[in-house]
Length: 155
Image (cartoon, rainbow, N blue to C red; front, top):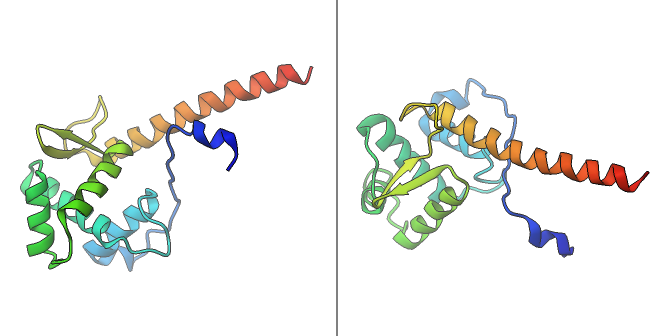
């Protein structure tokens, strides 16, 4: 491993993917498409727990219009999605990964999608766009600074 690898503060992937007719047909395929396009899962993996958590979060956001706690998410996954093997420890791990990626916030034990300062609660498209663009802007500012320094070193 190169020494600079320890300097990585944040990492995110965003994929430009086709939004085909087949993808648009079911909730499960749209959730998998979103998870892939946002870099939350890799192309050849399933990560059923991550997909189940996203499905639960979208259910609570769009259908119930509420922020769920860990117990509500776990119950939804086990009862509605019929994933009896989903355990709370794995769910907590994936929720922490979504928080680390700044996609989720946890306030008073409730999980909600991070929103941008200028968007309304429930406007997930603006929230995700703000989150990813903000992180990209920070990364590109550092790249620009490094290029300026490198240019000076070559003179």
